[in-house]
Image (cartoon, rainbow, N blue to C red; front, top):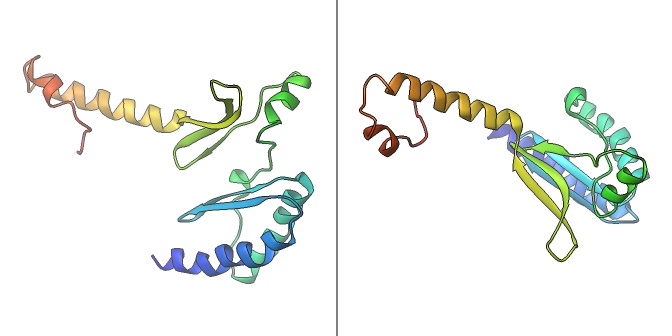
Length: 152
């Protein structure tokens, strides 16, 4: 709870009052607990944010997790630009979902999401463990009725 309040002042207000007003294009920021995603219309603004972010966090004796930090092209034109270079469009994982560039049925850009591979694997392993343990304690008809999410 306290870290949430702390980051509200360190990041949330700083982004909305300092970073966003200085951007030429659109800029968005999403945070949940200590994880966040910042989105910028222009690459140079994203690079500038990344550069000043480290300094901002150091002022409050915080640091950036470099292994989780990256700058990637994502959005309406990312798919076409990646295909032009012979690559796949980039995607990212945030809050257990992998976000990727997609299209609607009418062909418009849409951010699409799927459960991240890591979270799905964890859930499947938990279910398999539960089924293995329950197999010896329940009848075959009982197992499907009790197969809700394992709690223990």
